[in-house]
Image 1 (cartoon, rainbow, N blue to C red):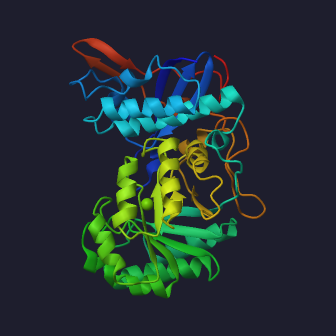
Image 2 (tube, rainbow, N blue to C red; image 1 turned 120 degrees about the vertical axis):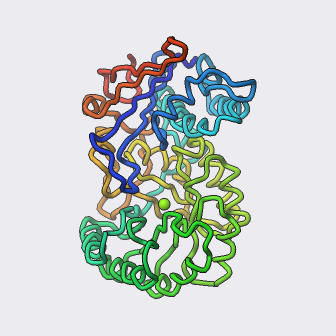
Length: 401
Ligand SMILES: [Mg+2]
């Protein structure tokens, strides 16, 4: 097959709020090769990611992503690796390139899986797709009572693990944070796993983070996620020296495999979380999962958007026996749920698994997306270099157009 086209669909909720909720917009990617279609999603600012695809070259190591993708052969997994390496090399000075390519790479795997009638996880060399316990990933309430009630409702929906993050956490006093943590524990009960995401609130302030450790341990919190700037690796290592029971987690800010490797090697983390839609796609996420296993670090996906992104994120560690939990966007905006016809719903055991179906196993519901589509035109010197395509009428992943 040869890659004929890459189309981007910038989708957004009618109103974007300042909540730290990444499901408010989406950049959906469609790749076509010899009449076969694959879908992917970038976890990034849509407009800048489109620009990184079509931009004219700045110099020999700063090409738009399109220059390394369009017209390339796609006959097997090695071609996806080869194209990824070309993007890394040719766009090394274009910092948005990994974000843009992540969605393309996901679509390439989907396309290849559809062409071969194999799930992506099998194309990656895995023989099993093991069920994972999804943790509901939600924001802290504005007050402890709201957090408590949110936790209660999530457990009632069947979740056995819940992560609270962002919101007011870390912005007030140590006591206020302790109240939030205890409310979260009370809401989900003593049995469910509790995870806390600080959303980089302390930047590099290790002492501020350390003040919260007793409350985290008192509430038997499994991990404290992103206490610091994503790349403040020494701060992570310094906090780990306090010897708290709570493990440190991070990695969603990794834009390439090396960033995740550094956090694992020098940050003393116990959980590495990468976002397949940011780190370069499924192949890069797989590399991190393999490296984590070798270092006794637990690999977990970061996914806060659609079920297309969720399926993509599950592919890279489908068979890993030590990775028993996965992030699950429990309260996404309507847009994120509208992207696919099918969803990865919890089974009777409260678990989900990467689908045993061709490609990503998800059907993109283009008919439901019209109201969210933003019309984009990019022009240079009066010449149009990008114009958004209308959403295709065909709705099923892998359908011939
Ligand atoms: Mg997070």
